[in-house]
Image (cartoon, one colour):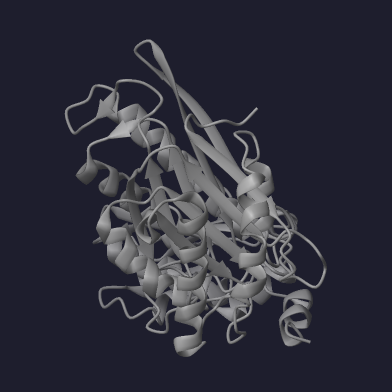
Length: 393
């Protein structure tokens, strides 16, 4: 059973979704938390992101409220008012302050959020809070996702066992910085504040900022971490002996969720990891990997199981990395080398079989340095076009 000491969860239907499915979720801690959030780099921001950016600065977050069914983005002053009205109602019914709550929304851009409908259900939302209801919360925050995304781990430090839970949503409009995705990370392990921020930032940079479903950046993307320290007396700092284990655990959790988001890509049939090595810097390696991942020609080749390496090498050359030498580029599919020094190495029947797999690995060696990076992506096919051509209708 998934539990994080001091945290309770709820997920209900408030009527925002015409389907009647869950559309309103709440995470509630017994005490205020050490909190850190990362937001989309999109210059067009949803109302909850605008408000959340200010609330996180007060360092007094105790609860997170999330609605699906409406992104509350590009909704003007009415959207800001709607989010504030919801936070005010939560504060009133819990005898807390507005700055103790953090808002998130996900759904269609441009639709006004019916805060009156939500506020009618705040009592129900609070009354449904339970320690073991994280799955209800996870279901309440999804939109086009085919399944909810949860990662849960335990770690024993000293005489106490600490819990780590991350819940995410996302299947489309996914692109780095961030790649519409939301992630809520909770732990009952205590952290020194600056270290907690560093932990969340680094874990996101190694996961959510290295995925791309369709190259479109959302207006709502948010990753927020809460640590209430109620699991025991340990507080992790830079000098803690357990820091490496904790960091590895959180990195693994974020990576697992990032992978689930790409695997759940709207209309996607294949998962692909693109690794670029032999670069002069990690940044330039990522630029190349990202260029391949966002190439529609490459993504459609994935869909058709076509080992068309010409689309890969063309994307590498158009990445804008100045030191690339086409006569040094190696490309592989799985463990099979298909391009050596910029020309075809060998034709192998196995390549067609490799490309038909559900999970595919593409390797690129620029042979210009020692740095590397990767991207997680998917194919684009008929189902993606059909789904997104009538999303609102």
